[in-house]
Image (cartoon, rainbow, N blue to C red; front, side, top):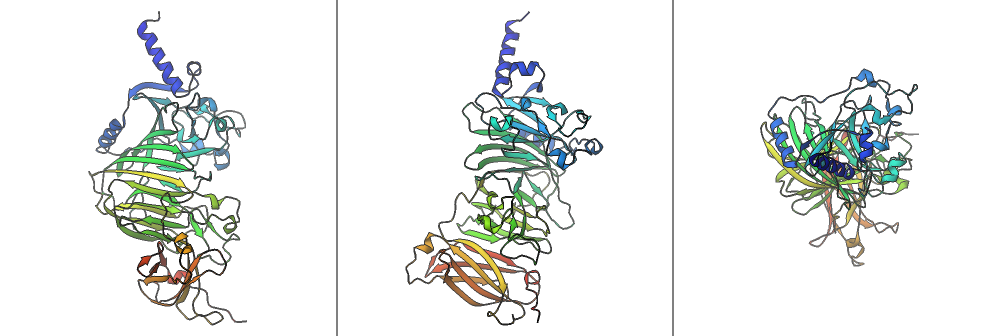
Length: 534
């Protein structure tokens, strides 16, 4: 007998299923399974993280590596999450969500829930949600229990039907996530948090997002709200991500963080990228391509309003640079060079997105820290940029941060001043002469409307300083190539192996014309090889 109460319950549940893109018929056929409903709010998630931080850390569930031995990278790429099991795939909800399977690459599982009207239902995971085209016997791996390791948000329902890779956001591995820029290409990654990154003998910690909650979007919504619980030996936290598909991707992030123990380097809004070599410095015969990198520099808009550009290095040993600031307006790893001819490869480095972090509220004193790690291949991420607060991160402390992440092809708030272009290094001294010992020549380009509109008789002045060494031969000229660039030449005479911090900008009279170029020159690593006689 169907009572009125049962009918209302069924009707309510049917509406909830429809809202998340699952028909009652599909549910009745046991396509996607859900656990019982439980109350959910972001405030409740924050309290859960706070409570959890007071207890001992318990590592997340991981599938036995032996069961995943045959799911290598090549097999993993061919695994398909069945379209019938996607959420938000029906009706007017704009972006279908699918999930990543466990593999030999990723065996730590993540719980997933769907939220509707402050009620959450956890998805009961099953390996049968995936198809394995390379499975010789057509039998799925014998894995019971949770099998999701992350999720992806697809561009549209057509991408879901075609099993294409038209996703614009993906979260997988520890607290890593990434998004496409406005040119539709993935590149660098972000993380929820960075704990003790390259901090002497202290091992780096990689907390995990252990549970995601997907809020059912309104029919006319162009955004998706995702909540996440972060857990690690030193930290527990609650996150809210509001994902928007614009010309690129915009993410609004709120996080509440609770420390179990002291943290030496507390990295907020960390970014991870790859820089092997560029036109600035390239090792002899390292690769046939002119440049290989996901990002070529760090941009910073300081609390005082200064725009800074710092080209990246691939050093011979780990280097950490700290750019001190108070209430920064923004920072990020950028891919400035958008010319295919600079790369000549087939993996679209010229389309890799920039990632700009825009703090909300007052972040106080601290530093944008840049970590540069040696690499000899493009398969390794070797660059990290993050905000590190000046205030120590101690056990029992609580921290709240809000920020907006812009995944674009340029900074969302570019400087109105002339901007830095290429940085090039070469032999010091005069052309044709044997290079003096310890001398390096630099050429830095600047361009922008503020320079284009200078009077014909104007002569910009280079304001240049070095932390050590002697600067000579400083010259500012308009590029003879007709490209509108101005360029600054100078020689640096320096002895010893310690880094040299260089700082440069253009001015006319008392008027600043350009953003500030910063560069860390590594004499021992960057010096040209001695000339060989014939």
